[in-house]
Amino acid sequence: MTDAPEITIWHNPDCGTSRNTLALIRNAGVEPGIVEYLKTPPSRAELKDAIAAAGLTVRAAIRQKGTPYAELGLDDPALDDERLLDAMLAHPILINRPFVFTPWGVRLARPSEVVLDILPLPQKGPFAKEDGQPLIDAEGRRIA
Image (cartoon, rainbow, N blue to C red):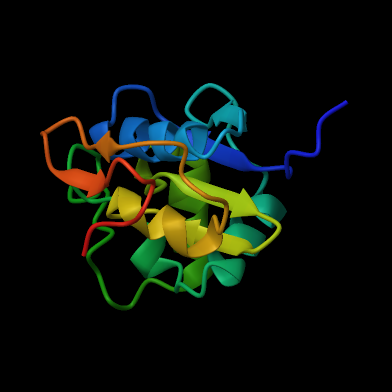
């Protein structure tokens, strides 16, 4: 039995930001539930709920880089949320990542250190992003 809070990440292992976010969660001593959303996409209701809980608009939750965003004409400002959600569900790569769900809130963790805002657990040691940027010092404190 564990006292660890329930935390879930919509993860893409090919994404550095997603890998850094997952590593920060683990650095707090928690093994989150990992949903590889490209293999197991969320339902429409789950996606809408995640976007709303994170305080985002549907358009702000769409990933443009490395996706069929332009080819699908999703930059058209006349497209409503339902059409954008249709595209995200048809092409899950359009869902920006990583979404993290904790008892303290939901965030789109871009950049990865945004996850610390909803992960008030102490970090267990130093942490640096994959690119070498230090985020957490040896005492587990966030570096400004």
